Length: 610
Ligand code: GLC
Ligand code: MG
Image 1: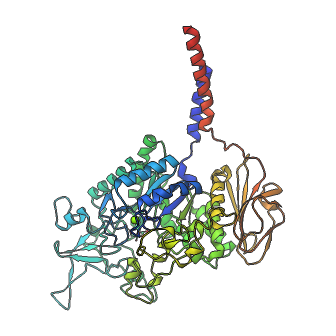
Image 2 (image 1 turned 90 degrees about the horizontal axis):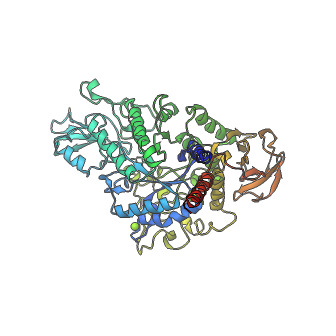
């Protein structure tokens, strides 16, 4: 009897020790709620639309969805201007809809990650109204400063300094009630919170608790590196001007005109992030899962990397924007390798890498890299170690929509005041509705009018319905590689990356006792012969996933020293070994001794009684 008990406990223990921190090798799918699926015909995506499509995401194999903001908002920056962090936007649904989404996601085993926007609220939020009225306790919730008298006109009040909004023009807005200026690093409707006020810090922690208590699995943290501004008490109580950057072609209205030494990457930021990590870790025992935190920070590698932690304290997973921004249409295999190595070699030991192919602020892969590289980039993000981020629609190879000046909604584009060049700043093209099928509004909405942004022109050919049950499609390939990502070698194995020529990139993943995988990309428009002799693996390999431009089909066998890879082909090969156990003891494993224990118990019970 004791032996059985010990075996049960040992199995349970082994299972716990082996249990993955789920996000360390997760596929996280970003949903931009406004453009994913409209369930009520108003031309705007919503929560019930997302819930309706959860089975699709389950089938695709994603581990988690990250929802761009769903909170109440006047939508000047489409949800990134929040009036109440604990309320759902009426355009997107109700709290009941959210609870229902959570329930369905839990049933399907999809985790939900929310967007957390700590830098600013909406100027319509209660906090801001109270602060503008100098209500007791709220006076210092935001960054307020006195204006400067104009040297030329004593009736004119100028902003406190030269700071510029990321969306152009002064970052200061005069508030007539308070008779001071407030700082907004984005639109006028997005006043910056004051993190030097501990009450603000507590309020924002409370927001994290609110959603964690609802069962979410973590957060994506918005614009984290602009959370702090310089400490005015060290500058005679003033916010000093920022020096010009010398960037050619910029005017004082442009963000790039200044060197942001007082509004960005302040030292204090990191401790706040580490505090949030501690808060999230309180839930490990409570929810029996580790919560993910990913931070958005466009900065130098050295500043970015510090979000991981400082050796003593843990932090977040900083989005790998070097990957997103470092790779271009012209990049060759050596460039790819360099950009990937750069992250892997600079990330602190034991941390989780991540691969960002796109988001709602960036041009889509098919447009940025050209449609011929869609499979290559999708595959790479999935085959490299760590977290793979997929922006909605990338799995079907959507490209940027073309949005006229009149249809333009993005405040960053509108603020250019330039009907000719606005598109260079516009984020609308990547935010066009998801292309579900070839019907009206691409199946996104059954609105009788327009959708909030027009659907991209190519929806009749590029859509999910046209790809879902097809042997060769971006979607089928994506789904196959997502499944491969779940195998032990890709989750936890070694990574070897090499560029045998400027055209060929090979990423190999191996874990002893398990099938290994080699993914090959041919970036050129010529067939290339690839010799994998140097990477280990078995002599015979089988095609496990085949991109739309590959002539080698899934299931085909190849010899590793001479593989003919067709132009623009992205392909995954595997050793033909049988699927081995992943090395972890699964719940099934300890169910067996448990069952035996109860059998013995029942036997003895009945034996003794009768
Ligand atoms: C982040 C978001 C972007 C938003 C900005 C302000 O960069 O990704 O969409 O406009 O923050 O919240
Ligand atoms: Mg709707």
